[in-house]
Each structure stands twice: as C-alpha cells, then as structure tokens.
Amino acid sequence: MNVLDCIGQGIFFLDGGTGTLLQERGLAPGELPELWNLSHPGEITAVGKSYYEAGSHAVCTNTFGANALKFDGNEGRPTVEAVVTAAVSCLQTARSSAVGGQAHKFIALDVGPLGRLMAPLGDLAFEEAVELFAQVIRAGAKAGADLVLIETMNDCYETKAATLAAKESCNLPVFVSCVYDESGKLMSGTDPEAMVAM
Picture 1 (cartoon, rainbow, N blue to C red):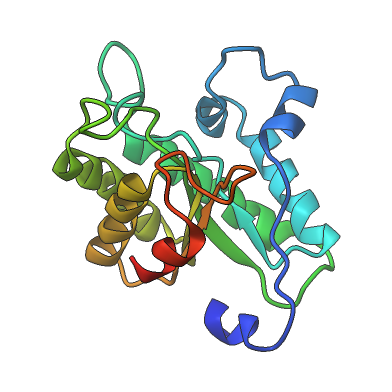
Picture 2 (cartoon, helix red, strand yellow):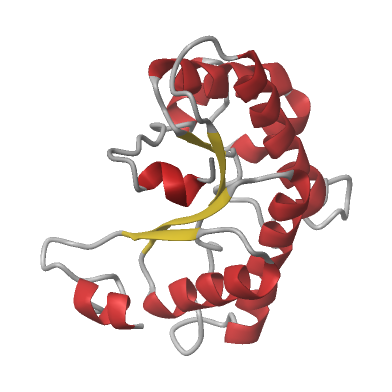
C-alpha cells in the first residue's frame, strides 16, 4: 500500500520531535544533529524504531537541516547525499526491525528551511534555493524515501522553492507544513489561504 492509499483509510500518524530525543541521548549544544546519521546510526535507528512501535505510520528522516550550505563535502564535512542516504538507511533498519505498530510504515524525507533569507529580504536567489532543496530530495528519493515532508516553513517564497524542487526532482507524494504566528501569517506575511492558492 502506498502512503496516499493509507492516508485515505483514516487517521495517519506522524512521529514526534527528533532533536529533543537526540539531546537526551547526548547530542551536544551546537552539534549538527544530521551528523549523527553517520556517527551514531544506532541512536537514529533506535529513535525511528520507537516511533514505529508507538504507532507512527510515517517517521521523518533526521535531515531537517541537511543541505549543501552545511554539508558540501569540503573541509572534512560529509556531502548532502551521504547525510541523507545514511538517514534513510537508519529508518529502513528501524522499519524492518520494529515490532508491532501500524501494518504500513513509511519513511518521510524531512526537508526544513535552508537557514538563509531569500532575496529580496536576504541574499539567497530563488534558483539557488531550488537547487539546494533538489539535492536533498534527489538523494532521499534515490535512497528509498516514501514521501517528502517539507516542514516548518515560514517564508512563502522558500516554500515555493522547496515544493518546486520536489515536484521537479522526484515522483514521491509531497506534503508541506508551515509555521504561522498569532496573527495567522507566515514571517513573510502570507496567510494560509494564499499559501494554499500558491
């Protein structure tokens, strides 16, 4: 069963936070959690397995901040592809070793904001943002993710770049979540209705 069919059958459960659980397991302040996909794969697998066994249909890869602005393969840093591939591998192991939980278990490629402001508010060009997101998404699709979850977005233009990258880089279902303030708007001033239209 694919993820869209599964969602059509009723309530679809996602996992919870990853960062806080990794902190409990020893992730140091300022340490990039995505590096744990390579340095502590057993911990990443254990977190994923616990979510599957608790009843999550989909568990997110530990890739929220994975992009070539941080992981470019230079100066001893791993590449985006290495980080993403390791993250998906950890969840494949978690899924296959999980006991109980849902009958159908999916791996969600977690794609978060790039960490730089888009032009004209910042210096990141739209085309560059699309390519940065596309690198992550291509790597995740190649490694075996079942869906793309673009999450915790607060800029409509960056959300558009991520969604375009996903649609151009894979055939996986794409889901998007945004962060709205108390006035019901994104940081860029966009309301939910405009985001849906876009």
